[in-house]
Image (cartoon, rainbow, N blue to C red; front, side, top):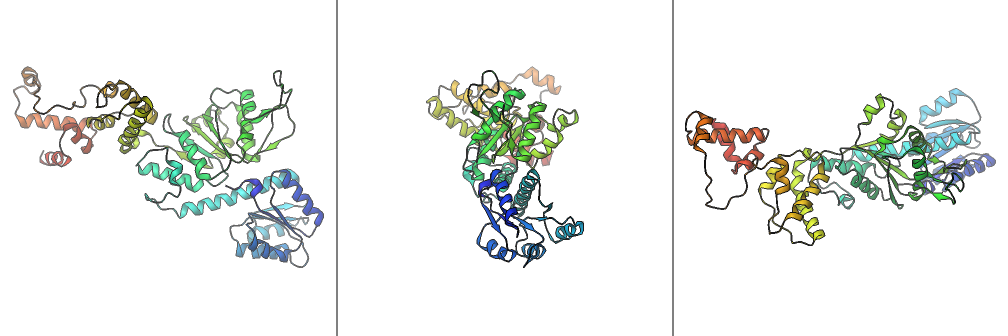
Length: 470
């Protein structure tokens, strides 16, 4: 992630006074690494010897015109944005520059805010192009994560989660915001931490839960205040945006923001500026914004409770976390990890996990997702007194009779003769009983033969042969 002070911005203008003015404006906006040149012939050497992210280029220069320099840049550095600046209000010249490959065109002298905004947008455009290139070269396979340590807290063997991790790696280094959506308990805060780690940003990850914050509290929490801004403001106080400098600001439950707070967040995203309470002077930030919500923001757009411009700003990158029931292959992985975690925290030995637990997990939809599974495992371990995990909390959810308990060898169960006669109209044959049991298992497993075979306690091949004969 390039912070503003790390951006290499090249100004080329034969007007020395203009160069000094541009340099001052951008340094005040937080961009420290400014390279200036008054001779277009120097540009090739400067670009070769420096990591330049953006060029601002005067059109009307002696010795070598800005248009000639632009043509050389677009040929040798096709991904490098160039903003043309000129006192000539000739529309045809502007059109020619854009056709050659200029990113933007500013009239000279550019207004301060317009210049800073153009620079911010040009750098975002360059970030986006780099990101799309990185994503285009990525192939989905299990060995393709470059920074697996960033995702170490998220236990998974799921292809859908791997795809999320790969997308995060591709966008982590950009400055653009990320919107993380998903039901409660799917791991949105863990993913925000993974985004921060994968970005290699040197600042801190700062978390704010926006739920329940009115506009005044939101503004004070994020932006801080000046002494005397309100009755109890006895001293200056910096907000969490400042604490996230060079790092990541994670805004959880973003869908609950008040309308006035949405306006302030939009300005923070667009202009990288914010006002502490009681101050008329804006401050700038280089914090990366990651926002999360379990609310369907699209529905809130329709009734006007969430701003469309803010929504589209936040949607620069979007990650939707899958539900736990959509990645059932992770259920036992997570359970085993949570059992070890709970045993360590509760000071107990790690118990054996009974085989029927996997079938139980697959019969329950987990509306609370991973967080609910985590709580269930801790509850089960707290009730465990022997060497085998107590499954009572799980049976309470899926029903005592859905999955048969593990039986000791040779244990015989009584059959109700009258019940069988009532069910079949006569005492059934073994084949008739098997047909009903196998069919019931398939219905309960929603046609999933692997799950049905576990319910029946038979191999899947046995079930498949039975189905083929029926």
